[in-house]
Amino acid sequence: MKEKIKEKIELIKSFLQTFSTMLEMPGGLTQLINTLWMVGKEFVLNWLEQRFRLRAPIEKILDKPVSGFERKWRHCFGGITLTLIGLQLVTGVFLAFYYIPSAGQAFESIQMITDEVAFGWLIRGIHHWSAYLIVVTMLIHLLKVFITGSYRHPREFTWVSGVLLLMIVFGFLATGYLLTWSQQGYWASRVAMGLAGEVPVVGWIILLFVQGGYVIKQAALTRFFVAHVFLLPVAIIVLLGVHFALIRRLGIQKPL
Amino acid sequence: MEKEELDPETKYTRRRFFVLGAMAASGAALAGIVGGGLLAYFFPPKRFRKKIGGWQKVKPAGECPEGQAVASVYFGIPILVLREGGKVKAFSAVCPHLGCIVKWDAERKNFPCPCHDSFFNAQGLVQKGPARPYNLMPFEAKEEEGMVLVSLPAPEKLKAYPSWFRFAMQYGG
Image (tube, rainbow over all chains, first blue to last red; front, top):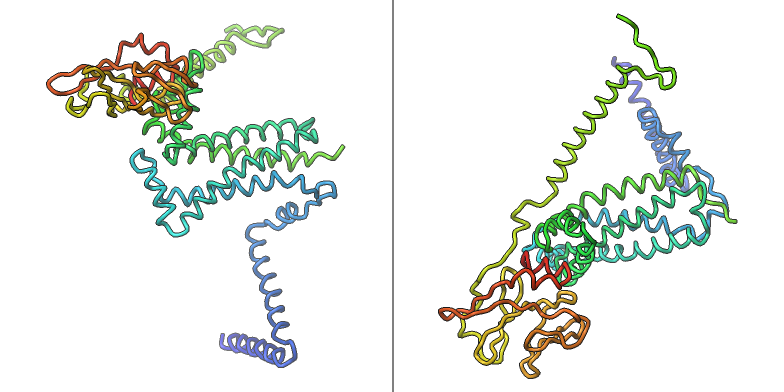
């Protein structure tokens, strides 16, 4: 036992000796840091690889060749939209920490987020503006796909899932607008739901299921909140999964 | 027991057909029960669908001067109580165009809507603007024991209005 410990101490001593001689050389410090970084990285990566076996799949994903025609600026709008949606999910969770979905307190709680909470104005501003930006980038993305005819065989269902994503984004906008419980949001929702109520025969049923009553009141705020915060996020995440899986399997269409 | 004969065309025995049929029927019944229950859950309860109506005190008569329209609320509906020639009249202040709140212009003796420039005269009839052909909805109004009382008019009077307006008047707000 004692000998083994002695051996280890000797080993550490020799390591330290090497380090000190390296440090005495010109540029020795950078060299030392480099060596330690390389050895440490390899050690950590091996440790992870032995336990999770993720190296091969990650390398496959990261090393996928991208051909020249795919490296064009016009292909970037889908990615920008995804980034903005990610931003919305994060800032949305942040806002949910303070927002109160009650007719009496919703507007006040949003005022509090904007005026009192540290950086609340920033979080709300990002959520507000990227909501509008998503529409812009999404429509540019849609126009590009439409003009270049990329929706054609065999990518019909990439297009279909994309259009469904557009509908979900519109759903987010329509429900999020009411959540501020401001005059603008309230009356805009009244007008929009008035249109839904004009649908022949089933209009009133749509109203009752969507807004929990014939007129927009607390029940409507609750339902819009549930849709905005639970149902639509789940739907958009699932559909984004489908959209990207299809893009990965079928690739981007080659230019004509 | 005699062995059941297979129908060479369909390869279905009576027993298999019966079992499959029973499974399909019970599956459909289960789906119906669960689906119906879910629909019922999301259908708002009665309290959320209750109609409003009846006489309601909205303002002391002394607070309604001649030639003026005073704002009040009837079951969440903004209303205007107008006194002309000693008699009180009441209108919903909700513009039947898109739901903005109209106000009383005492000089011109009309109700302008601030949103889209509709005008209604002292009888609540639309004079110009996008609210046409809809008039302001008149309430029944009377004075009793120094109070102004207001009541929702008969349902037939609401029939002419668009559904969002009708719903707002029938269910309050």
